[in-house]
Image (cartoon, rainbow, N blue to C red; front, side, top):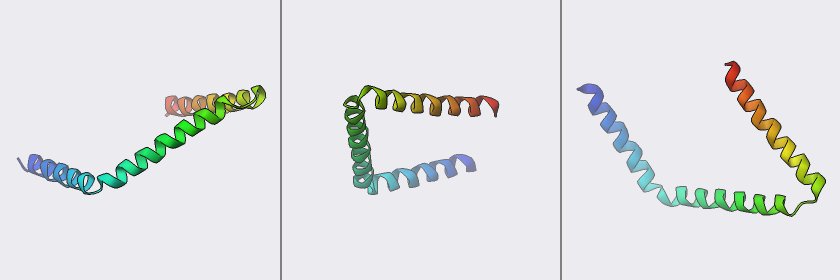
Length: 72
């Protein structure tokens, strides 16, 4: 019974926090989307060699994440 009350209280506090700071969350989300969009546009307009280097860098980064995750 106590755990349920505590969980409800935590949920209420988090929802109140998000509701009262909704403008800031939306602003950060919009800035994040603009950054992704501009990044995609920039990469699509690069020359072949630079685009290949970025592609290899991202592949190596993702491979490193999956390797670390699978060894732990």
